[in-house]
Amino acid sequence: MISAISWVPKGASKVVPAEVEPPSKEEIEEMLKNESLNRSGDIEDEEEEDMDIDTAKRTDEVAQALAAADVVGKAPETGNGMKGIDDALKELDMDHYDDEDDDVELFSTGPGDTYYPSNDLDPYLKDKDDDDVEEVEDTTIKPSDAVIICASNEDDVSQLQVCILEEFEDGEHNLFSHHDIILPAFPLCTAWLDCGLKGGDKGNFVAVGSMDPAIEIWDLDIIDEVQPIMVLGGIAKKKKKGKKSSVEYKPDSHTDSVLGLAWNKTVRKYLASASADTSVKIWDLVAGQCVSTKKHHTDKVQAVDWNKHVPDVLLSGSFDHSVVLVDMRYPSHTGIKSEVASDVESLAWDPHDQHSFVVSLEDGTVQCFDVRAAASNPASGCKPCFTLHAHDKAVSTVSYNPVAPKMLATGSTDKMVKLWDLADNQPSCIASRNPKAGAVFSISFSEDSPFLLAIGGSKGSLQIWDTLTETGVAQRFGKNK
Image (cartoon, rainbow, N blue to C red; front, side):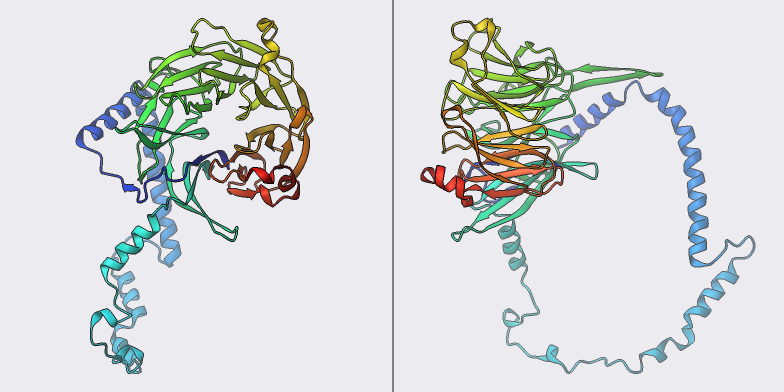
C-alpha cells in the first residue's frame, strides 16, 4: 500500500545521486551503543527465552537433517558410511564418463569464428567503460524529470520509493522506480523540504512520520542510504523487567505515532507535526529540536498545514471533531477552534485565498471555512461555508490545484477520486475516476505540471491522472494551464 505521496520540484534533485559512503568507526560505535541501550533491561528475560530457543533450534536442525536425507533417498547410516558412497559413485558411472563426449564438437565453425581487426569492432566484447556509462545513464535524473516520493509498505517491508516520471511532448508518460530507501517503521506521512541541512542554502530531503514517535529526515540525493541524516524526537531507552515494560523518550519528543507533517515553504527551517499523542509540535530543522508544543486538541491530531500567504498561521485537525487555527507569532495565542461533523482525515489551505481552507472528514463529507467569519467572535470559531457530501466513505485526502483557483481533488477509501469546482461556494463535480489504486489514501497535484495528479492507495501502485484530458476540467480550467 501507498500511504503518502510527495512531489519533488523539477531540478531539485542531483543529476547523478551519490552512492552512500560506508559508516565511519564512530558511527558504527554509536549504532552499537544505541542497540545496546534498546536491549537494556531485557537480558534476564532473554536468557530464559534463549534456553527455549536453543532447544527448539536443535530440534529443528535434527528435523531438517532427516528431511534432507529423505529428499535424496538416503537414510542416515548408523554403521560404516562407505556403502552410501559406493552407491553414489555407481550412479555417476565414472568408468564411462568420457564416452559421453564422443559427439561433442570441440571447435566451432559457426559465426563465432568471424575475425575482427580490433576488439573495438567485436560485438561480443564489451568495454568496461561502456558499463560505467550505462550505469550513470540509469541513475541520471534529468532536470525535466518529475520525481515523486511514495511512502509504502508491502509484505511487511516499509520503504520510500523514489519514482521518476518522464513527460513526453505527445502527452505520454513513462513512470519507473529510481531507488528505494528502507524504513524501520510503517510510514504514515511525508513532507518534502529543501532546507540546507548539510551546508549550503538548499538540499533535497524528505521528512517521514511513522508508527514510531520519531520523525526521520532522509537525503534523497544519496542512493542505498541506511541511516537518516536527522531524527527528531523518538525513543531514548526501553526498559523491561518481567512482564512490565517502560519507555523513556527523548526530550520534547512525540510519544505516539506521527500522523501528519507540514513543511513551511517560507520560513524554511520550520516543520510542523501532528501526532496520535494529541499534540502539535513545531521543529527547528537547523537546530534539530522542538521549539513549540501545542496541546489544544483532546484526541489524535491527524493533519497540519501552514497558510501559504501568512506563513506564521498553522491549521490542525483532530479526531476530537475540531480544527484549530493558531498564529505562531503570538506564543500565548490559544487558537481559534471550529467544530466539524466527524473525525478529521485531512485538510488544506486554499493556495489562492488566504482566508479559506477545506477539511475532509471520516463521514465522507468535505467542509469549507472562511476565517473571517470568526473575526467578530473568535471563541465561537467558524461556521462552514458549505458541506459537500463528496464520497460514500471517508475522504482520506484532498489536494488543491496550484494554478486553477477553486479546483479541488478528493480521494476516498471508496476507491474513487473526484475533481470539484468550488466557485461561489457552490461545489460541483466535474470529473470522477476509479484509478484502480484500491482504497485511496493520498493524492497530490504537481507544482510543475499542475494538472497531473499523483494517486496512491491500498494496492500499492502509483497512478498518474492527467486531469486536463477530462472535458469538464478543460472547459472550466483549461485557460489556467
